[in-house]
Structure formats: structure tokens, C-alpha cells
Image: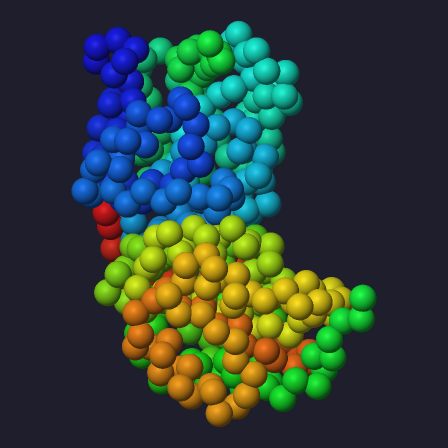
Length: 172
Length: 206
């Protein structure tokens, strides 16, 4: 794939090939391009959420109905999901989360650090496996392999998209 | 503030749920944690009912994911006022998606029934059906009387949704009637009944 500008396109292609039909999201600047690609994809239903844990429940319902889904959020949303992840542990439900990281790699906003720095550990405590994507060139392979593991080994898995990949946010 | 006297409400939840599920056909049902789960089970445990034992706040959104995945089937979510109050945002999310095959029924006894019958917000006047209507549900209402139930059952089975009913039911202690509680089993039996053997034995359907 060609450089940093195209990694969201690579993720979209991987989601499409994984058979993802429902894409739930609380927006993040780092997910903006991917959300647009999913909205433009007639095979995908995008569902905007008021809070991230709605997406855990939505995709549990999608799986009961025979569809694959993906949940897009920022690392600050991870904490909102914790109790709802009981669904995935007790029902052995697959889940693919794509989490754009804040609170690392040049973060300017101290309020992002508490959840950003604890997101991986919080997910682990809730029984969610984590993978990390830092290099744009690895986007396709990493999403494909993460999704295969989530859907076929039937586990909840969060792919953390490093702030280094997205670029540190500024208000300039 | 003095809460309402929902101990005096005429409708009884077990009878309400039995009426709503009568002749359920190919209806898909999600039953929220606590009393709605026991009510649905008392009406008859069924593989196409997904009864929740936890994950409070999830029932309506599970119904949405299911309704979007299976547009040819009708989906009924039975939940309580406590759970729906925890997930008010989900009413906004559902209204935006506007699934025609989804109905949410809140069995509103104005109490947290599993924890000592403490008053919920609806006991103090919070109107869940008005919130659903304001969010954009095309059909939302509150039911208080027995003669409204059969017409409601017809609406739930036939009218384009999303539909929201708050059914005011008596706050009363009732015997537990419990379904299986292993989540993986409940998931697999639902998928087996809905999607067939391939959904549990081999690669899932895409």
C-alpha cells in the first residue's frame, strides 16, 4: 500500500473482505476517513452511537443474527465498554474493535492520558485481546489477521491504532 | 419526593408478557436482565429468545443489531424501566437507524425489582414513551389497561417500526422462573434455531 494517506483504505478493504456488515462508531478524527469509506460502501450499515458500549451490544445482536461487525472508537471510549464486555466473555461472542489511540506519542492534552495509558490493561482485564498497529504498510495484514482471529477463534479483540500512525492531534 | 403507588397498577407483568408472546411464530425475542427475563421464561423458554442475565443496558441495542442483521424477521425486546433508563441514548441510536422490524417494550413497574423495589425515575414522572417519541420513534405510547394489550400485540407484529411501548405493570414480588444461564449455550441455541447447523458447527455465515 502507498504510504500514510492510504491506511484507512487498507483497513476498509480488509473489513470488506472479512465480511463486515455492521460498522458501529463514536467518531474520532483518526477514524474520519474510514467512517466515510464505510458509509459509502453499500454492503456496510454504519451505526452512529451515543456511547461506545452501545456498540458492544449492537454487535452481539448482529452476531446472533449471523452478521459480522466492527466497532470504531477512540481510546477514551474503552472505559465506557467494560461492563458490557461481559457479553463477550460469558457468551463467547466475537468482537472486533478498532481503537484509535490518544494519550501517547506527542499527546498535548493531559486529559487524554489516563484512559489512553490504561486502555490496553483495561481491555485485558475485561478479557479482550489486543493487537497494535503502528506502521501504515501493515494496516491491511494486521486488520485481516485480527478480524480472522476475532471471528473464527470467536474472541473479543481490540486493534489499537497507534497515535504515531494517525499523527498527534494539534489545534493548529 | 413521594414515588408513585405502582403496587396498585392493574396490569400484571406475567400476563402481559404471555399475551404479547402468544402465537409468537418466527418472532425473535431479546429479554432484558431481571424480571423481564423471568417473565419471558414463564411464558415459555424458547431457543429464539435471548435472555440476559447481566450486561445491564444492552437489551435494546442487541435488538437493533439483530433487527439490522435479519430485516425479514420481527424482533421484540422486552426489558424493564431500570435497564432502559440506563440506556436512554440507545433510543436515540435506534431512532436514527429506524429499523421497521424492531419493537421495544418496557415493562414499567417504576421500581428496581431485583434489588429491593427501590423507585426508578419513572416513579417520579419520567416518561419513557415521550422520550422515545422525541428521539424519533414513529410509534410510541404508554399502556395502562388490559383492553389495550391485544391491539398492542397486533401493532407489535404488523406495524412498521421502530415501535416503543411502556407498559405500566404492577410492582409485585413473583417467583423466579429462570432459563439456562450459560451465555455461550444461549447464543449457540439461538444461532442454531435461526441460522441452522452451520452457524454453530463450522465457519459462521457471512
